[in-house]
Image (cartoon, rainbow, N blue to C red; front, side, top):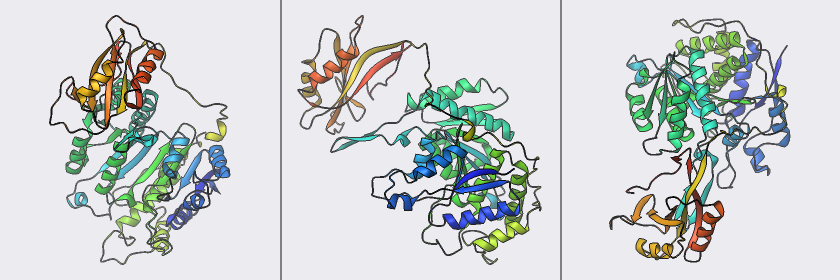
Length: 487
């Protein structure tokens, strides 16, 4: 029995490479049926601000699998990326990108005889990709970086399970917890806790800038790396460069109910319609999808055919041996189809018999949104940070205004500018912008309420424009906020 999935052809070269991949699937008798959905630039242009029709959304949520080509989000129209929106709306929390040396795709490392075979697992729905940004003053913009314990646990646990499934013995956590001690610190802490459940996997953590250096000097030393969203996005593109570019970078976005498989390269409008696009990345993404769905035998046969084709020199114009004439999209696809059943010289992929297809979202009749909360934690309010606009005030002058708003319950502790303390101590060489953080903390032995914290901010608004307010919290006695630089 065939399984139905949703297919979005994409923009630019998307329809051409999608047609190529589906031709290969058909030639290998992959037991799939396709329901085509409308998504992408044309939908934005026709007034759909989400980039998809309601019918497309309903179809994808019913079928649970979306296979999509590259899509363009129009620039300058104030709309969100359709790619990011789709991943976030359907909680596809784990972005898996596999990178490997491919015979026939020449790189610096292949020339040096250094094989690459690594997987990046990127948290996919949190971090700065929440897109929550504000101009606090004309000169100062801020963006919220949201890292959650449940979201971190989901993607990290997926990374460990993926490592076991692939037979990996090592998993690293890339982070910047040395600077972002609460956000990246939470991600790293969650990694270290979950690692205790997987004693068979050697774990390590590495600061992301050091990771980037090591990836371009010794990529063969890594097997799998899990990272937060933005860092994972950057590192995964770096890894694509190690194996020949985004044209050889498959991508899977995995959720508990809905999963998306896509090529992450661009729409290449300059070559759209010319029939010369390289379908390899989308084909590799489709192979990931087949394995995820349990069609492991089909996946292995198609992957071996692709590897055999590349190994024997067939290539599109964007890569390969220039002494061999480049194939167009159709002839490259025909070559892969002709090589179905063949195995590359390196032994290729061993294919297991197809398994029973995984349950998809159509079997999960959800009635409400899932809400995850850590219970049993003692929370205590200990103060408030009031962010204010002060165009003509020096730190000491602002401190005098703040002191006027103190009650018997509070002390004025610190004023910072761009994260650096400028009062009660600081340096005359610290350059300022017109937005300050003023920190009020409760006195020892006092108890304060949310109303009091808001009240002190409201009173302070009579002296300076309040841009934002953040409560200072302790959780089980541990502070839930950071000190300023120099505090």
